[in-house]
Amino acid sequence: MENKTNLPQVLVLIGPTAIGKTALSLDLAQHFNCEIISVDSMQVYRYMDIGTAKASSAERALVPHHLIDVVDPDEDYDAARFTKDATRLIKEITARGKLPLLTGGTGLYLKSL
Image (tube, rainbow, N blue to C red; front, side, top):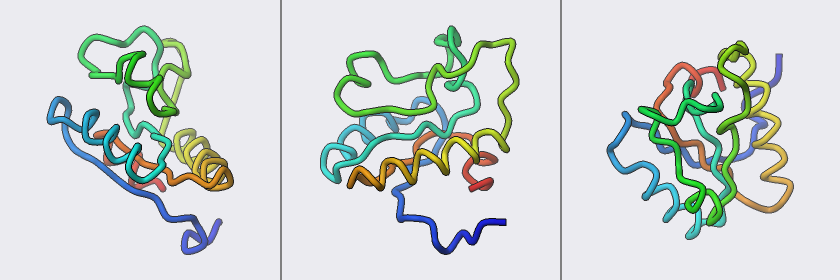
């Protein structure tokens, strides 16, 4: 089991759908030199655009986004896989000299980290 006290610092912005997280996360990302990691159990799926409030392609072009549209709807994606993917991304983003910004609304995913 990995010692979680050795993980890099991250920013976290969590809340329900449609409260303005996307706009705020873009502002935070530009101010603090962040890359965004989606913490959303539905945004990870391709073609699930209605009701998920995914960042638009224009918004994604402003700041790198991760864990959006990574699996097809018929594939399994669970908290264990999220933890593996997010932990890897946190380390990669930090190695690039940037700050990871975890944003979304799936509390289970956040707790899994």
